[in-house]
Image (cartoon, rainbow, N blue to C red; front, side, top):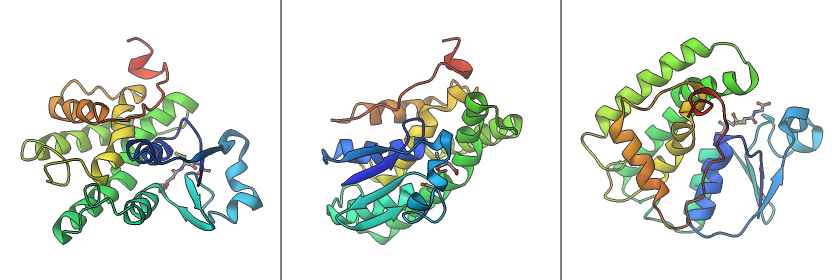
Amino acid sequence: MKLYQHPISGHCHRVALYLSLTDTPYEPVLVDVAAGEQKSAAFLAKNAFGQVPVLEDDGVIIADSCAILVYLAERDERTDLYPRDPVVRAEIQRWFALAAGPLASGPAAARLSNLFGTPGKESAVAAAHQLFATVEDVLATRAWLAGTPHPTLADLALYSYAHAAPEGDVDLAAYPRLRDLLRRIEALPRFTPFPENAVGLRASA
Ligand SMILES: N[C@@H](CCC(=O)N[C@@H](CS)C(=O)NCC(=O)O)C(=O)O
């Protein structure tokens, strides 16, 4: 199984985290995103949207980090990470939507601004705080995001860009429950870290 990825991408890390936690062997294939390799004809044949991550599993090609998580958890019958209960599945889907929406346009975009100078940093930081304040409220009612007594794909989907938020100058100090969630994910057996960059608040840490 191959994971086409780039190490700076939280979308890719969320899949790498699943593979690591489940002790699944795979071959990481570096896609040179800075050089635009994700828009090459060869890569577009794998993902018409020209983005990483893409998973290739014995001829099956899946693009989009959350779609890959669902594919793998179903394939592996990981009903702990992706329970069959329709209410829990709906909850997980809701967190996937947040991961593709405000998590991407908030903390992930603010971090990209600091890493590559992309515009819109101020509004991205504001969106990040709005998202994390709500997550903090939700975490007053439940230990794990989907309301289960154990982690699910929802927690994996949030982890990477929440952990990396300080790289976009998003201070997590006001969100103790979120920080505790991140620590509990990091304490899971076979956790693999998201490589850190000395930008934003991490540059001064
Ligand atoms: N919804 C997609 C988003 C993936 C995404 O934004 N990938 C970025 C890297 S983090 C990318 O490939 N950017 C290069 C580009 O769009 O050209 C997913 O969850 O996989």
